[in-house]
Amino acid sequence: MTDAPVRIRPEIAALPPYKQGTQAGPGSFKLSSNENPFDPLPGVIEAVQSATALNRYPDATAGRLRERLAERFRVTLDEVHIGAGSVSILAQLILAAAGPGDEVLYAWRSFEAYPGLVLIAGADPVQVPLGDGARHDLDAMAAAVTERTRVVIVCSPNNPTGPIVGHDEFEAFLAKVPHDVLVILDEAYAEFVTDPDAVDGMRVLGSAGHPNVVVLRTFSKAFGLAALRVGYAIGHPRILDAARSTAIPLSVTAHAEVAALASLDAESELLERVEVIAQRRDALVAGLRELGWAVPDAQGNFVWLPAGAESLAVAEEFVAGGLVVRPFAGDGIRISVGEHESVDKVLRIAASVIGTLP
Ligand code: PMP
Image 1 (cartoon, protein in one colour):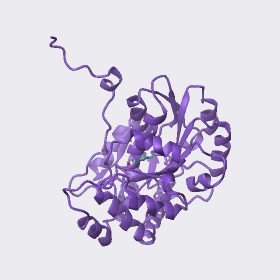
Image 2 (cartoon, protein in one colour):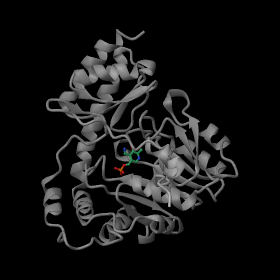
Image 3 (cartoon, helix red, strand yellow):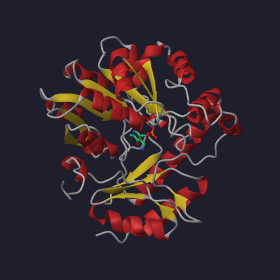
């Protein structure tokens, strides 16, 4: 017998837990998690309230939602997979394709969950620095693919910096990546994109010759269901079957499924709200640039302030002014596009802090 503590895998013990955007106190705006500021539609609330009895398990495959999305995107049922948030599908896909000795490649800075999910799978993260304008440097990413690369993640629009990946550059990138490497196109913010040159995952999948691409989308952002945890993947059935095998069974709740279905019923109304947020975003970017901030292109529901070494201090100023934003130490600050009244507040504080920067 030994009194030694339980042995935890060293790479897990060294892993900091996922850090959530700070909650906002009364009177503050929470602009730290890229959430949708609009209240849920009455039809969505009703659907959740009338969902199946709580003592029954949900449908393990979220079959009705899968069917609905298959119709919506004109693909087969096998080409759709539902998860408890797109982040859980990311985890499933990485676990399915990469393990010890394998590499998972992605741009950095990008979505904060990527490094942890790769380490949990036991694989090695390979981070390729963003290029000019805080955009993906796809040439450098293609050059970084090795025989050990099993997964590449491309995030468009990129969280937290904002720019999209172009459609043509993505196609050119795919032509350089071997077909036995899984390419995940993370389009969590797809619905907010207004740039006509942006990659569109569904169009990529619709053109022949990309059996290794999986597109990830979510109901958390444009559809405002972040609390319910529901996202989806579209791609080759062989890859999605593997994700179904690594998934924790029954993690998509019945409530999440019916809320997603009700949101699809109200899609045009929800997309009108998305348009409002995109316009608010463009106004915010224009205002910040006028103040002198070098804000990169913003195509999601958030903007990036490149505050560099001052990021934590500048974020404190925003918090003191009633705006909870998300700082990335030494790099920049991500500000979600929130309630209408928050926009002027962001501009006012951004104006006052820019003068204090060295
Ligand atoms: N991908 C990106 C780029 C994100 O920013 C997020 C959420 N912050 C997700 C995936 C995960 O979203 P969810 O799990 O809520 O679908």
